[in-house]
Image (tube, rainbow, N blue to C red; front, side, top):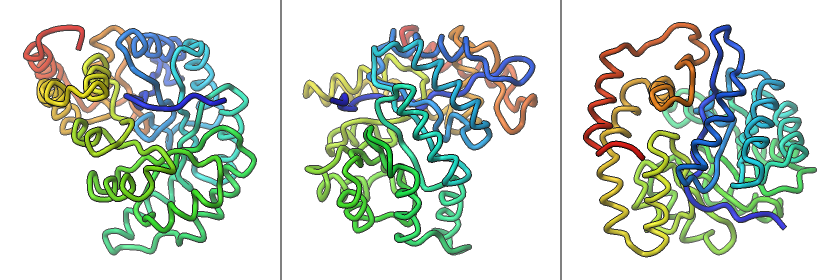
Length: 305
């Protein structure tokens, strides 16, 4: 019996050492940090984990480090999207063998990019049939639950076909419209699968019926508390906590989101460095950016954030 996924499942950034290799010790510290601060689950190897710039073996070792440190204390939702369908299938199979509770996956990274271009009229994205065939090859032999990581080009009819064809599809992560399509899925599919939102309108997403969110690991204590308050019906208090955290969300999102998240984790003593790929070892943020973050954290009232 697989554990139900619900709550705050932060996308886990990938830590790097000074030499550019993955820092597995920092990944384990991050796992402990998230658990200590109440995260209901965790999601390594997603887009904000820089999954597109990690090798297959690197992603496997990173997931194994997270699972080892977690030791079953929370569900682990592993990202397995890759540049090719074959690699995604191998990562999905590895996630199941390693002990992940579920995986979240797009057809390929390139399908996501093509869908974004198609949405702006610049290119043609994958058809529904092409995406379903890709999923058949990626998850066909997988027994653990699957979360469809939605991209532009997917719609209600596509999700209905996926649910009917693949019994292991139990979750959808919807972040393509940040509202309208999320509500449509909740209204039309909520009795069949569990819907996660992006966490950009966190309290609203929970009030609409989403059962989880997958934002950053910044301020994990507050993120986790918002879910618990909403779950208990204290929606006004949940919104108050969200409003208290919004300046940090804004700072991260509008500074340099992936590096900013690592600057936060370095400040908290979790990561040794704030390097990101593919720009390693260049850093975009400087001391002035860090000082602005400190002002925001001070206004939040101090730890636990």
